[in-house]
Image 1 (tube, rainbow, N blue to C red):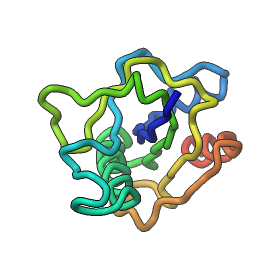
Image 2 (spheres, rainbow, N blue to C red):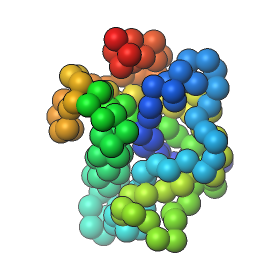
Image 3 (cartoon, helix red, strand yellow):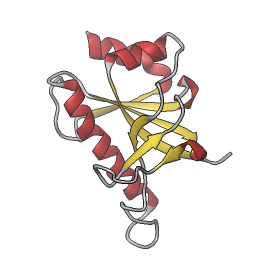
Image 4 (cartoon, rainbow, N blue to C red):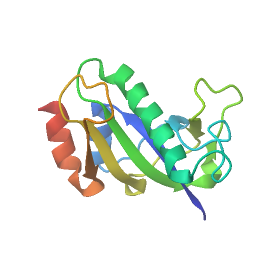
Length: 140
C-alpha cells in the first residue's frame, strides 16, 4: 500500500492518547499534505518544498490550537487511500484523513522551543520515540 505524509496539529489530549497507545481520531482528521493546489513536483517546485509548505500550514493551524502554549505538529505516514482533498479546502494544503491515525504511523513531532512561538525557525524536531519528552515539554 502506498503511503503519504501528512502533518497533524496536535493538542495535549492527542499526545496523551498516543502515550496511552490509542491513535489519533476519530476520523475524519483535518491535516495538511501535498495537494494539487500546492503544485506538482517538477512543474512548479520539488516534493520537499511542497511538503515544507504543508508543514508550515500545519504549524499555523497549531498556533490556533495552542493559544499561547507550545505548538505541536506530528508528521505521519498514512495509507494514501484514506487521504482526500476536501471539495472546498480552507487552505491549499488541506487534506482529510478518513481513518484514525495509529501511533505507529507517526514518524516525528515538531514542538516550539518556547511557549507562544509563532515562527517556524523555533520549532524543535523530535523522533517519535521521544513522545515522553514532548509531553513533558508541552505540559511542563
